[in-house]
Image 1 (cartoon, rainbow, N blue to C red):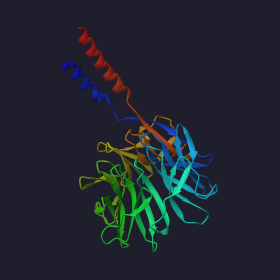
Image 2 (image 1 turned 90 degrees about the vertical axis):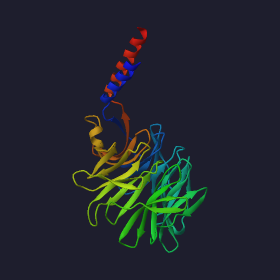
Image 3 (image 1 turned 135 degrees about the vertical axis):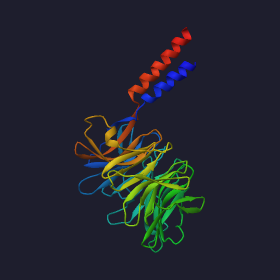
Length: 347
């Protein structure tokens, strides 16, 4: 048996960084599309556009793209931002040309307005598997407030001390919420909201920062100024410590999502990036040769490691879905180890 464990250990180093397959999700018979979110089951939400500026939210599942409609009919804009395991979608839509934009929840063909906090506009960004929704809504007087919508009620999450506005971007299955709070006109700070308390996550040294997503281990990601007036870098906040994830070639960078394994996606210098196991990788370097893609931004990653975002496929702007595939060497080495074990048992 000890030989089996030795052979298995020898097999593991052959497992290199995962390569990916990539799928063009197409459009709603329009000009281009972008993906914004992905569920644990691999279903994708985003928006499809035409050249005149019309946009429609879509849900991609079972190999096809569904037009989710809009609050105001066929010629009104809608945008899809988040999806959960139930295929419930959130985003924003207008009810008529020139009207206010409203946060919506879409459930199997029915689009419901989530309302505001006393003002005119609202946007929903993220939904968890318990149908808790976060985003921002106008309050009386036009101030923006982060909200948590659940059970038909929109709740104002408040601001950080001294703040006068806030936006919520991400929520995990525990109901923890992240986003940012504006403090005057000179500062924005990322926050973690939990059970009625909003905590300042700090910055990498500058005046501006925002958190975009949080996983169930309370690890948050986002973007922060490195120094006042300096570059902006993606960050990982974990255990009350904010870590600079770096950037490509000294450019700015940003992080948009994190999964249960702590893998982070975002972008830098017009390239889609993956941060995993302490290393930053250009996703374009993980594609099959001759794929015809230029991946510009990675928007979300699920716990299976599937990644969605926006890129150009043979020159056309497209939503994409990347799915990791194990390296052939991994299977080959593991097969040899198992074969050796079987022979030993026969002897």
